[in-house]
Length: 424
Image (cartoon, rainbow, N blue to C red):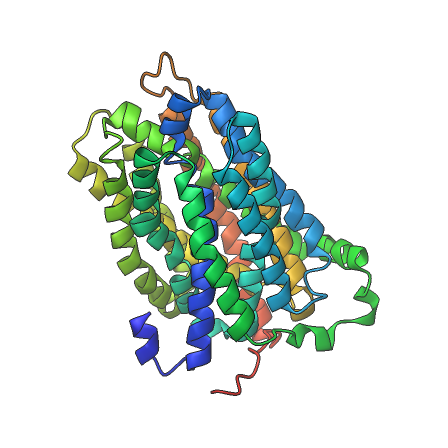
């Protein structure tokens, strides 16, 4: 963030927008990914089977996906600030319910509530970024906003695991509630209305369901949605059982588990802004391909590991996440350039919905593939790795089409300009 303050490309208000969106994303991402590191603890303390744990993870994903799809028709009908605040408030309530859950079914229901509201937040945030920032600096902005994922690893997950080990697995959710409420208040008080899209809404699109129908029927949008589904399924397969694999297969203790996420996240914080800047310089699709190659090699090596020293695990994870982030930032940036301004909110909501549903499908599939006998090593984790890499390289071909689509759109002069900033 200090680099942004020195960067004359952005105004102070734009920097504030980046900061508040990144922090909100941090809380949502932490809530979503904290389940995976708690997997080994949950399966032990609550007697949850791998299949049930996969259901807990997928419950959030499926409810978020359905919610995002239903909200898509309304996403361009309201001030994006108010739309975001509504869903963020619901997300905080859902997370609080997770924090007071007493059994498997209570937690399952709480994850569904959290997903209903949390699943829409990312799409609205992306729409806001696209409204305010031009395409030639958008990867840089995405790099800082996506840094919330790395910060969640550096600070959120280690602290969450520590609290879970000391107090109980409920504690990380209450932490998210405690830091999420001030973030929502800050946005409510200090962010200006974000409603430029309302002034150019087409009269034919006043009906929310008609707007949704038109959005999902456009061929170029369908190509983007198919690409999103493929990328998400491939990228999410390994995640639900990541901590269980580290503990049961690689030999990392529950006490040392936070260090894996912390050091990996610290490296990712440094890498993300660099990836964003390089992506804006050398080309987003080229960066995506480079990231895919790095991630693919790392995944095959990683998923075939047995007992491994902690420092080697950390190094491998740094390489792996460097590849993943080198894919995520350019892919997300290219997706934001696909929709026209009047469709942007609906497109982002549907795209986010597909990400959530695809993640849920991947989680269920992973739960069916992974086998664990008497709390021993996980079996077939390398099968998930090979499947993941295959889908990642299939995504390269699909992302190539999206890149061509965006290039043609920019040449035709259809790329919308950012909203004027009175403080510029």
